[in-house]
Length: 104
Image (cartoon, rainbow, N blue to C red; front, side, top):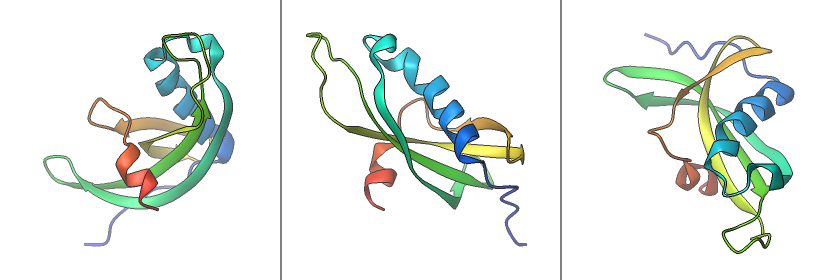
C-alpha cells in the first residue's frame, strides 16, 4: 500500500502550526524572533501503525531564563493536512523533534 501523505502544507500554514506549538514552550513567548521554516518534507512514522505526513523543520531565536537571546535553535513537528491551508499538528512525542531536523 502506498503512503497517503495528503497535501503539502503552505509555508504560511507550516509557520502558523510551528509558532502555535513553540510559543507555550518558551520562557518568554513574546520574545520569539528570527523565525523561519527550514524545510517541509514527506515522511512516514510509526504511531502504533505506519502513518504518513510532512515533517516541518524550523529555526528560531528567543530569550532564555536570563533574559538574553540564546541564538538560533532548531525544532520540528509532523503535520497532516486536509488542504495546503488547513493542517493539524499530528504527532511529535510531546517534544520538539530537533534530531530529525538537524540531520537534513
